[in-house]
Image (cartoon, rainbow, N blue to C red):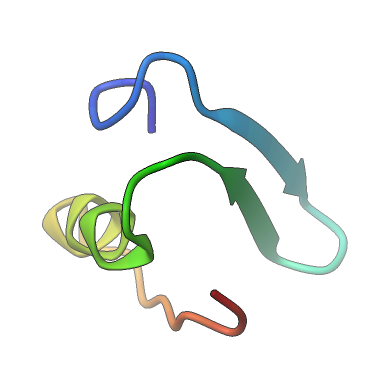
Amino acid sequence: MKSVDDEAKVDVNVGANTVSVDSWLMPEEFFVAFHDEDYNVAILEA
């Protein structure tokens, strides 16, 4: 996530399989970064 926005605040909850990202960028930009690393992701809230 830091490669997309090095100032983003990232919270990972391993037990819930969730990642929350607080950034000024659009959620889709992070979606692409996850997808590029072969993670199956969905945007739940923007």
